[in-house]
Length: 328
Ligand code: SAM
Ligand code: SF4
Image (cartoon, rainbow, N blue to C red):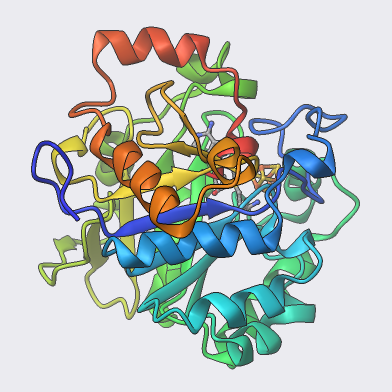
């Protein structure tokens, strides 16, 4: 379906939990966020009804996220059920720690591909960033298992933070020489945990590209990559691609094709605006499928034309949700 300004909305990101087995310092407080009561979180049956309504409105790309989506029990059965709704591209964003256990089963259940978030290739730094007892080797094994299972094209998402992992930009980029994967550099957003200090630790995509050009020529990849926010390049001679996602320095609002559903049942038509539409209430006050679909349609139609307007910036300050509660 099209929104009010004619953008084709065909992508839904669904956060299926606000819990996580890591505590990345820029995303979650060390003690974890105040997680919602179980009753506040949508049940699988409720998520299923919303996703079904979304597919009827023309959404054919769905990404599961969290918190960490693989910590929620029953995720394999849920994936199998929603894939049967005819979703063309069913993907999942994960920190990778549970992929050694689940990669093959995820593929068998119908998941098409995964994006894995990994901000460092150094074991000690991984412990510092993630503040968890799980080792980096578990994520690296997860990446290997995901590739063996055929959860491809595989994307690695790296959030860059000055003074923390910026010295590894070249090491990440070099992974694309021999591996057919995309390494995507993401600008840090001032949201939730990082709100107070993100500006001081911010590195622009422009700066990253300048550094990478010292490694080799950086050639734009012209093939269309869908309506996602990443712009793709390839280092001369590399098998894989480099993606750049600049929420801050390069707005892509006019091409935005997505809406988000939080684990507690709110549609967020724009990540950078505070407006939310309570679908849980619609569901739990007995709406039938047609009414639910209408409520979702209204939320999509309310997608703002631009996210980072002055009004939205003010809203960002007011935004009460952490990134782990929105799903990235
Ligand atoms: N736990 C899963 C994971 O880490 O991939 C899924 C949820 S996590 C919130 C989704 C993505 O949001 C991760 O790639 C994470 O690095 C990113 N993220 C979290 N806080 C961010 C911020 N302030 N700026 C940019 N990206 C952020
Ligand atoms: Fe968890 Fe992902 Fe946030 Fe890290 S970025 S704390 S893995 S939700």
